[in-house]
Picture 1 (cartoon, rainbow, N blue to C red):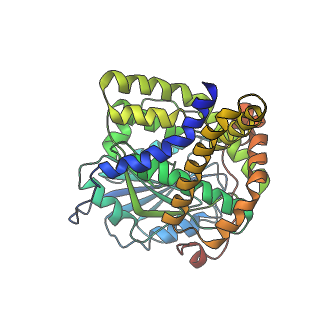
Picture 2: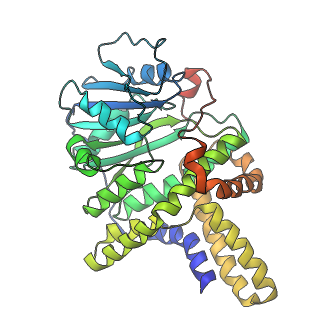
Picture 3: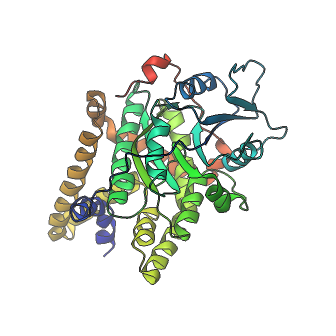
Length: 385
């Protein structure tokens, strides 16, 4: 029974892939209003990438927006944005929190913006980003997640990070949304009606990593859907060094242990409410990280070779199903050759994530934010792969 439960985590994506065939595909309206946006850019300690992200935002094919740069615990003496649309904010006290930075920006809005969107300091924004979001808000969605595409594939770790992101992007966002549930939030490249965002988080005190998980739970508890806008693209820095990978994944694993129980609770609510959105998101929310599932699968196969060889057929089906969906995801999001080549180093990637598992308990003590290393030319960053 334990092995079956482990394998189900790898079968669910296959079931979602075929289930969407029976669902009517969502097509956003071509007509959309020019909503008033607040673009909130958050930075912690590091400011070296802020000029690039702000410059990319100012190249948007859009007019009705303001940019709020919250530089928490940063030296801003060398930051100068000579544009009336950009407001640089430097909190007097260290906030050390994504949501506190967001609400610091909200309190300093120059006007009551209809929609706010959250961008990380290491992101770059596609020129059509806001136009693509508009299509979904025009359809009365109040929460939308875009795509975080790699802006750097400069190391094997970055390529493997992007491969994993493509898989989760396909399963947890595209397929979930297409079967009538909600796309998972990704921390940046997401947008909400301002009033709804305040309703969800204004009275909560969120410490450490995982504010996007709390926000997602608040949205689902209100029985709302999160749309997936796969053409609303921000370019995101992928992990390029092993130490960076270990610390980042330690925080993510810590977040999973912290909130997995809430996912199980949400599944129960979905069953009691007969709410497909809540049930399916709760199931995905409580799913262990992929490297843990892969490790448990390997252990199960070794055990079965000696004790229950009849179960090896089950694992053959599970593994074929997993790779079928995995490579469809890479093909759908047009993974470059570098990503496919990097797959040969997956065992090393899993090893570093296992190291992260042992650091997860004290993850928030190790670092509050990911250290960014990639500083290539902006025009190279801003090109789709």
